Length: 115
View (cartoon, rainbow, N blue to C red):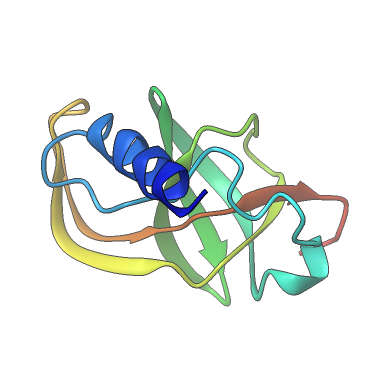
């Protein structure tokens, strides 16, 4: 069983672009409720980089860029997400763009909460 889990994580990591931080597996955090995700913000814009999405979020009067496994969302949606891992001067090859700072998160959910 442990060997299968290690193989599954290894196989998922191999599908990431070179140098891309781990975003967890596709099912990571599925049993996590919205209330257990500590961060909240309003979507300003999104950039599709299949199978991932970059999300510009307004949070506490600051703008933050997130990277996560693609989840359907649009401008104006309020989302919750985990604390993730910050990468500075991150260059996305698929977008041919360098972000001064990107927070790579494992879980993002669109909520019905107000900002």
